[in-house]
Length: 348
Image 1: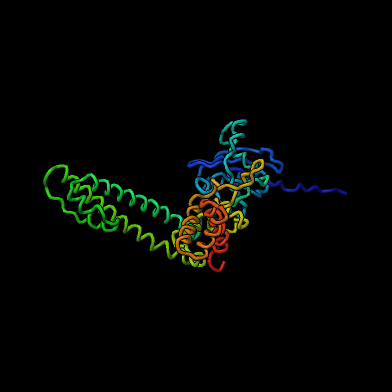
Image 2 (image 1 turned 30 degrees about the horizontal axis):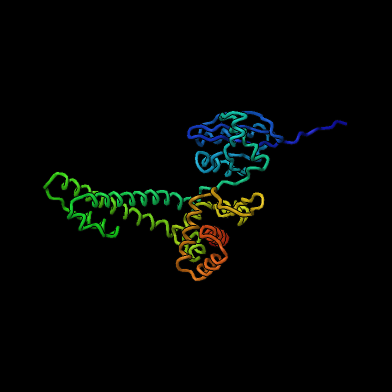
């Protein structure tokens, strides 16, 4: 009687070190042994070749990718669409780099962190409403920053300019300043005064253009945020731009956040133990997503100014001896807990 031995398909874990033009992939066996390393172009055809190359070693069950939010975003989408789980991998820590050196193949092999479970974070996903909000917010953030710089430059020129300009514009609000400067009609006269008036007029026109750009972007951002997370906007102190920052941090697939505590840690709102000897205390988390942390701060700042419950809490904690920084840290943690259930799409 003949026996047929069927060899079980080998499970393979892939690791990819991503760059703008090329990606370096490594294939690992079930115990972390290196099966091969190869470089592929960062194109749609290159993604298919990379996945096919990994599949030549066995059944691909997991791919750890470095930079899923930047150079590896396209590859992460491609592999996820193929039904294979993707894990985001951080770069190798300093001790590993000091011991082993630094190279693209070594970075690709560092995907053993995904195989061991140490790196198990899923990519944010860049294929839905939140990605649309993120791209619009990128343009809005730069426009808002440039508007602020333009107004500051105009105020500096007014301050050092001719007396009549300083008297006319010194106490103007930003909106009034922009309107007034954009309508200036410089007349010929002394060279310095004429040039100052021309410069102020151009700065006013630039700021007015940026105002229009911000308005157009808001007209696109607000409906997207409202349709995606109406419950988030219903919370006290949460406006469209603040909600947008929180949604961008969560990503298009907020189910990747394991828990409310994980979300708070991602927002740098989770207290970190800093005890030593006889001192037991916690400190602020310096890591995490700084934009999300700023969004939580804006909510807390708004509530401290006008929400009776928040003001009563702050007064009680102050009486207990807490500093203002500690009170704000506690409030940011409470806000992180409050917004967490509203990060999923409406009806999701």
